[in-house]
Image 1 (tube, helix red, strand yellow):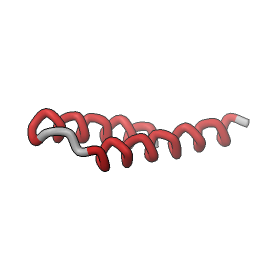
Image 2 (tube, one colour; image 1 turned 90 degrees about the vertical axis):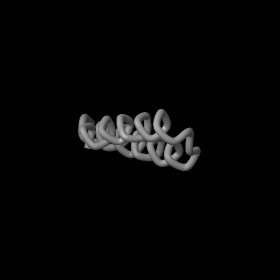
Image 3 (cartoon, rainbow, N blue to C red; image 1 turned 45 degrees about the horizontal axis):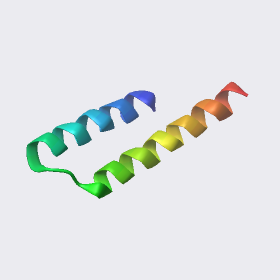
Length: 45
C-alpha cells in the first residue's frame, strides 16, 4: 500500500508539472495517504 501511495504521489506530481494542478488529484492522494497511514497504525498495534 505504501508503494501505491508513493507511486500515486509521483503520478500526481508529474501530471501537475505537465498539465497544471488539479485539486481533485491532490485530494485523492491525501485520502490514499490517510488510508495507508491508518493501515500501518492498525497493523502495528
